[in-house]
Length: 364
Image (cartoon, rainbow, N blue to C red; front, top):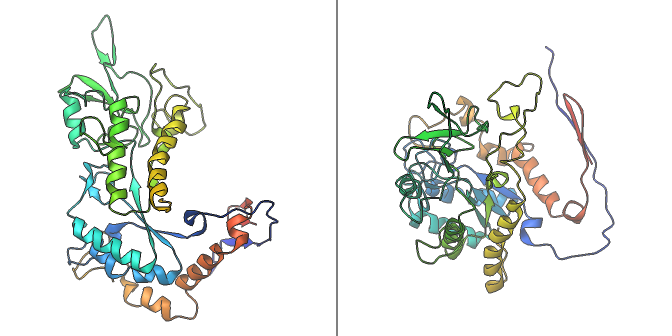
């Protein structure tokens, strides 16, 4: 039988560091991502949860990782695996309660593990209170999202989308809202309307914990920082801003790419706009305030018969407990790799990668 082999070729070389600098924890640690739904289920409903993570958090420490990044645990209709958030400061009951979260936080602190949450500033769920109020034009939420009247044919009176901007999930990035009688922009699913970062109230709302009508994205950050999280993994940064002229984006004319595919246009008006850099700086400034205060920089499956995703039948023989005991296993390899993360070569050295062929990837 002919086997297919992926060949990894790597070498470690010591790089001379011209200027020694003290690296922060996020520059030296290994971050272990957990998608809560696929972790341990503590209550037998077939879905992983915060208590399940708490019950198995010690193995993350044993693996050599120094931080856990939790994928979204916020209230969500789950149209996009929890990234369609209906409330950024409320834990979805599917995953447990705030008390469960705090218990996990405390356990991680005792183990010396950092806790990182997903921060999703680019969009919300269409079930979010902000969007519902924006649809009704209730200030200050009226322009929290990107609304447009669209184009109207002078002869037929027919209305169409404002431009050719496309969704990352294919098709127009504009959807019509009957109640407001306008189109709204969504770079992802129709249930994930994009927030308008040119609205000063929204920006302050995402950052500051002040009056509800004045401060909320900072409010979101401060809420979790005040609860003791160590940092955020910020999602979809390139999509924070859109050009206000709403011009058509140029076609790429790529071979094999159809109209409506995300790669069918060059995203010069909807991605990586200059204003994005300042917004990231503003987010970072909030976190730096907390570092200035305390000197710390922040940044078993189920008892049910079935789980929300199917589990391979071999889990009884191939599992973490077996890999810990085995002389050679993926877990042991992971431990070796996390050990390398603590060396100066990895922390301060350079990395070069090259794709040699379909089956050979090299790095040095």
